Length: 65
Image 1 (cartoon, helix red, strand yellow):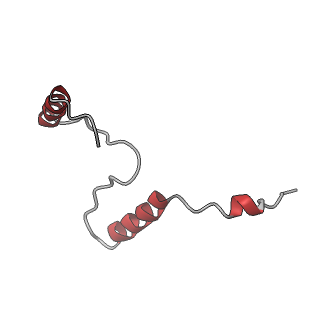
Image 2 (cartoon, rainbow, N blue to C red):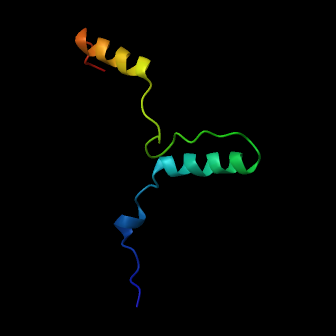
């Protein structure tokens, strides 16, 4: 026996990244070259110049948004 979802759970908006992922998949299926950065973590490490720039910014006290 299945139970229906509550009204409150049905009111939850979908995760916006999932819409981006769906659109990226559509573009990829249409033959476009797509680099997926919309969800998850990259499978590569951070480039050394980016690490050094981050370290320099932290050392300079640039720690705010």
